[in-house]
Image (cartoon, rainbow, N blue to C red; front, side, top):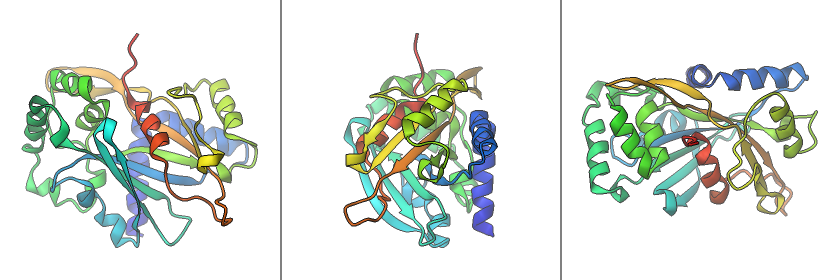
Length: 266
């Protein structure tokens, strides 16, 4: 029950930041669909106090174990995914920014953020859902974003679910991911077109798409500003030659999906 409480808290926080997720969920439900969550994703900094290992404990305590590792050298990221023996529970995808690969000035900026984090905050049993524990100026946010949109998003939103994911395999009124995408676009939702709306292929055993993160007002120490918040992802998993459904992730797909929170410049 405690773990179910964590998932419920993550979903409510996520839906508050990303109301389009609630609208899409309702639209699918109105077609008679049962929406199954494939995975929940989190972002963090590579640091002993807040890194991937610090976010994982509530999931490990609930019976999850590490099932895959991924590397994104161009984005200065690495990631793991966790799975539970109960296939009804969502997979967990945790990525972290390699702070040591940032320019020296930005490393100092991240260190200044982390220095604001109190021991009480770090002791939170659900650090992955604890929110943003630091003050941040618009200048700091934009400086981070010039090098890494991922870093800017993480600095602005802190520790919470970055996105939830609809398992398209569970949908019965759509024959393909492009058909689902067409439905979403006809309902007015903008999709991430980076590298094409569909990331991956049946040959890679995983196809993914996502909405673009809608703007949300964020509070900075010097002003408030509308910036991209969270997005909703859609994943279609294909069967391996063994006949089992592919349960992992594809780094090339994920690298494109990450851009769903990038700021859109005219």
